[in-house]
Amino acid sequence: MREVLTVIGPTADPENRSASLPYAVREWCINTAAVNPATHSVFVPSEDGHIYRWDLVSNSLTQFLQLNPGIGEPYVPSIVGPDGTVFTLNGGALSAMGNLNGVGVALTSSIPDVRRVVTGDSLTLTVTVTDTAPTGTVTLQDTVYSVPSPGVLNSRTTTLLSNATPDLNGQVIFSTSALAADKHFITVTRYLTPDSDLVALMILAHQTRLHNLISRVNWETRLALDQEASMSESLGVQAATWSGSTRDRIYSAVEKLLRSMLFTDEIPLEAPVQGTSASMEFAAAGPRDKIDRSLRDLDLNRRMFRYPCSFLIVTASLELRKSATSAEAP
Image (cartoon, rainbow, N blue to C red; front, side):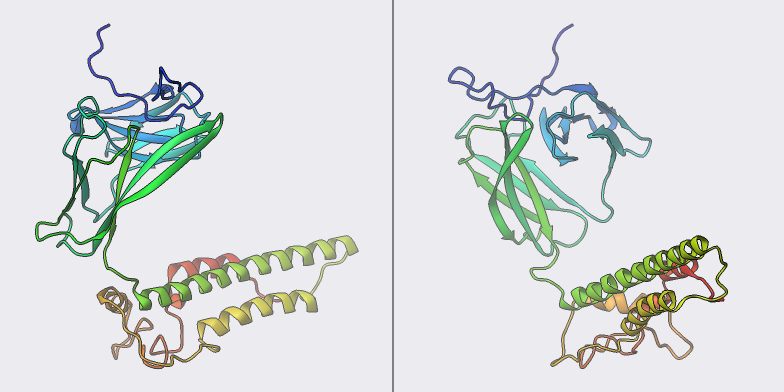
């Protein structure tokens, strides 16, 4: 059998590194790789806990994703689904990997072929934003993995470029010749705005608190009723009504949820706050009554919402949990 194309394993192996083998790497330990002829790619899992995309055109590892802490997860299978989703087993868990909707960020190298680059070469990395107008900023980071001892995977991440703004073509170009001899994984992160949206964070905090309280009501109700039933069974009686302690536990959890839904204890804003267009889109997405009012309408002058009742009252999550925890007191 003739060797056609090869790619060196990406995981450092310090157990076998020496003066004669200064860049020893661990074996791939592949069971079955997933080949996608449409994209000229091979998706290769490794016992280091990552899965890699081997681009056969450039003969380079162009993408990687961490699945678990790694080391000791060898010989696992991979397949490609009919829609291009890649499935693999690693660490006893099944992972599915595909494209994100609405995200168009690509990272390319001037020397992608791992056979044709040596230490000290000047590399040019190009980030291209393709999904929308070139807005926000991008950050480039370089990660090098190592195995200091059996069963331990360490990494060192260095920021190469921080918060760079794409040009009119949606590109950010970065050149360097300072990468040391090792396996480098360059990742790009895109930030749609240079700062956080205060209003979005306020809405997220409200949603998170409400969902936690909804879950708490569910849990307290189930636990209280279960303990009530166990107590009645142990006494050999069938309770006609809830006991006082059961009622208090359920009502206490419901009271906290109700007060939060009605913003009873809301702290007034000391000054007006302003969000981005995304916050306005949130307000426009809610259902409205006959006179065009919505529980998503924002105030942002003295309080967060215009009307003192949470928009979560009309969401499917609350309806489902109401059905799951409904229990009529006898």
